[in-house]
Length: 112
Length: 492
Ligand SMILES: Nc1ncnc2c1ncn2[C@@H]1O[C@H](COP(=O)(O)OP(=O)(O)OP(=O)(O)O)[C@@H](O)[C@H]1O
Ligand SMILES: [Mg+2]
Image (cartoon, rainbow over all chains, first blue to last red; front, side, top):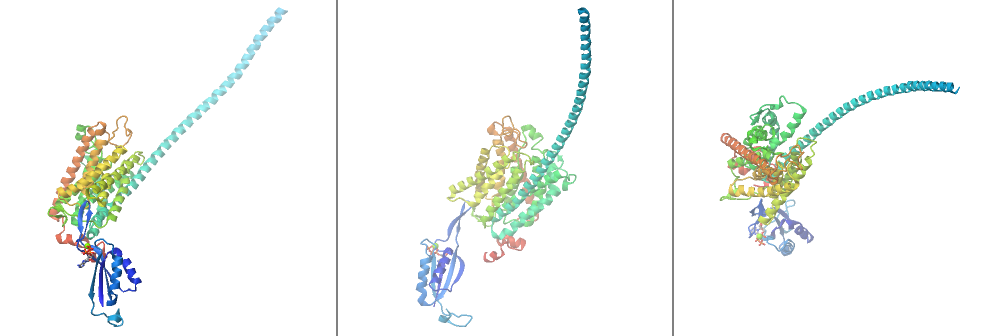
């Protein structure tokens, strides 16, 4: 079992969610986050004066899935969330050691 | 026989003639007498009619007079309402250009400004401004409208009252996000009670030093500020300048001596506020002839909005050229700059001049904002000093340049309320001179008296909140509530 954690543009979340839905991956956690990558934010201006917005609004989506599905999901996110410009985001994949469904007590694969 | 008959005949003819003439005279005489009688009756009737007509005309004239008075009352009640609504505009501009954590505080400041303004202008302000003159300096009676409770005074008081609190509101914007609420309230009371009405007396009471007395005698013309570029806006603007010098910049406004942008949280509110202010100017300038029958109200409104548009366009172009992008909040300032500047000359200049005055106001406000931040190192979050102070001064000076005057051939020769002297462009110099004097007096009076008042308040109460409170935001510290409670949990 793996956790796929993808940081994407807020403008892309609906498209990505719909594409994952279509492919049969419904369960997802989505959080509003702020962050920055290599470029350390963007320049804006206020009353004729430039200033740096160094933490940009992003969306973090988390999905815990079977190892077999990781590639499929990563493909979908890569395809749908990309614009080709800087700031498209990143995907982090980490192993998950245990899962429990609270309602039934089922664990691991059964709980997904 | 012939002879006799002839004699008889001739005698008879004479008799007949005599008889006929007697009969004729009797008839005609009677007829003539009848006509004379008729004529006399008719003349009498005419005289009656004329008297009736005269009476009717008198009644009509009175009716028309009553109607004109009613029209003035109605016009000023409505114009006053529009000016009253400007307080919503001032609130929204100030909120939009500052941060969420001070929003409730700004709402309270602006709200209490008008509430205190109403009461204080009734208690003291009106009396100082329009009470019986003492030495051309200030009024001395009609406090609480005592001795002057009639419709005309109530009407005038309403229209003047809504102007009075405006000056304090201007100060509020410049000192936003770091000023102690209590101190601000005390200052507001003093401004509406004294600082504003004293200068107002000099200009608008008819017996003040800028419209009669030695200054006017020496220069040969009276100061003209149609609706208050100096009386309202300069007074507010230069009081604000004194305020921000004493209270100091917000934490984080300057880093290593360089100004840093502190973005406001809501451009939608700032723009809505700006448009509300512009709407309010219909009343501010439109009502200022104090006469609902003055046809030149049309010229006033057209000039007012020509300058508003020109000011905004100019600032948009300047910021576009300077930074590559047209800056929204400065462009909004540009519209207010044009409005403030045209407030003095709107009833005295041609349409094209209103456009030029607006364009120059746009330049003044941009240069003013940059000068305050880069050179004076002052922090004015909303640009109030540049908009109201500098552009107010430009407005009164512009009268001395562009006024058509009331000389022969002037379009405004028959206007009831306009600058009497021609501006520099039309060969006059006296009007320009007195405008300069009035402008300087407004700067000196507002700046010096406010500087002293703020210093005293600072010494006794403290003008500025603590560093800790400023960082936390005045909403929670001063009022125990955040304007956006749910949002605030997420931020800061
Ligand atoms: N190494 C990282 N650790 C944690 N979060 C990161 C990391 N890199 C990126 N993020 C998150 O992803 C968001 C988007 O990053 P972004 O796409 O700008 O990365 P980048 O490395 O700058 O790539 P690019 O050159 O495409 O912009 C960031 O705002 C941040 O929230
Ligand atoms: Mg990046």
